[in-house]
Length: 178
Length: 357
Image (cartoon, rainbow over all chains, first blue to last red):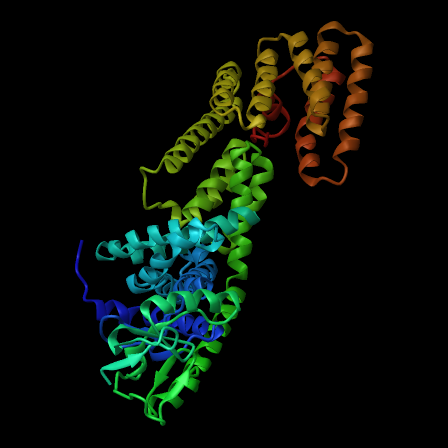
């Protein structure tokens, strides 16, 4: 395992950071949560953030926390699908395809919600899950997995997730369509 | 600002232990009841520590009961932060960037169309290969190779499908169109499988080539037939080798003067593969039978088969050329009731030139 400073990684994958934070902002505005501060990208830790008011609306909390995860994952699959075949399967040297693959991986790599995002979700979900809230029930295992993966960032779990989504997603799509 | 009164129970508490619900101050006990009642009425039921209302929720500046403070939802902000909170919007550069990203996505998907087609053909081909439907798989895999000749997977699948249906030319094109036949990982099972098939097929073709050369020589017919049988057994996926082995069997029977066997094999081949060549072979065997028995029925049947062969060869230059070499010898056999080898015929009538087979 080798160490690359966070700001370097963030700089190399900046589109993912911006899209992640834009996702937070989008869902905050969608659920009319007050936003106190936004940073779409910076050379620091975290590389971006959206500070918003807390809410007891679990649906809002879920989408503000998890929305970027879904959006980044979807965009990663789409961009990587456009580039997966020439890069991995067909072995065609196409610089544009490599660019799209980098873009897809950059976006996928920043899909994970932050520990702060997950802690908000984690605080509300168990109580609501007991009351039968479907979203809370769904969010519990998802949040649990993401918490573990978040800790796995030190061993490149975020890059691993991006690559896995960028390979397995297109394979699943193309095999289903073939 | 140290103390305040609960609006429900009227008791005074430290401001640190009071809460704000919808702009009204409650103590810790009362706020929970008030929150439940608000929820039942469909109002906002979340409450915050009152002390939070005394500082700006964004910049933490003390605002107390300042009239300049702005209340947004449950939160209070100083005069400087209030407008900022209300007007927080997507920056222009972000809107442009996201629009550009969507445009890039469209470009990426449009750019990937040719690859989607090639990839789809490869996956369809792969599935058909797994099902053992090699003949159907090959056109799909060839289509993939048009776009991606360097794809290990497509080249190996195409070569495998081609080799398993006896199409060595297509396998050759697939393999040698891929970096001149070089593959990065020679230990991959897929590569090893195709390599074994290729070795087996080319080995068989080499034997077939040697058999063909032997068949040109008088007295080597039996050896040629044995070698061709070995080739056919080594690569049964190519039915023409088995067919050629039968042709050589007929040649060996001719060499042994076993004209009944020659006729039987020729008739079998004619029934299985009606063509000018097989018709001429039957005519040749019947001519031999006529030559040794003098039975006119054989001669008549031979003449009929010659006519049939000529009729079938019309319009096909290659077939006609083959018959041009074959017909005079059969005609000679019928006219003189003498069976001579091709070499002898060439020596007598073609100035010793070796004729094409």
